[in-house]
Image (cartoon, rainbow, N blue to C red):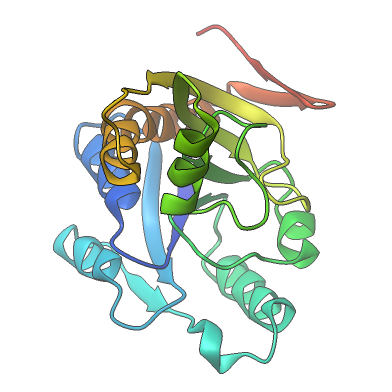
Amino acid sequence: MKKTRIAVLVSGGGTNLQALIDAQMRNELGGGEIVAVISSKEGAFALERAAKANIPGYVLPRQNFESNQAMTVALVEMLKGLSIDLIVLAGCMVIFTKELTEAYPNAIMNVHPALIPSFCGKGYYGLHVHEAALQYGVKLSGATVHFVSEECDGGPIIAQKAVPVRSTDTPETLQKRIMEEAEWILLPHAVSLFCEGRLSVEGRTVIIKED
């Protein structure tokens, strides 16, 4: 059976990339293989993680392009050249334009550190998400893996996991716990479901076939 060729898009440290690499080492990506890590920034630590795992790393610096659209067009060309089947956004800080979703419908995943539709959309990234959750006083937060659509954080939801919010939490402690207890578990699982051909989309709903 043909392996699903995966590209992971990053901008920074790559902790979610590491969770995927670890899952791949344990043969837990459902037959998928990470064949490229593409960074929007030079010197991103995620590229070091890729090199250590013998995964080819590429840099497509956002600053080299006049717009997000120009970068998106170049990215699609690169992905097609690499024969990519699934794209995973793992802490990639660029909002790509419709050229990407049109080229890869329901084949781009993102992990978001909140329970969508709460605390998502433009401006909700990194610690900003956790600051907003604490400010609102929610008792549960968590993570969501979803397919990427033209709307920021608005695509069909694949998987979610709730994480309790503690009264002593800071944005930093909440971020760390959501990564450890939700993001690093959900993302590899969602990727494996895709690679096993167990995901289909009907309207806004992702149907997961029983194995």
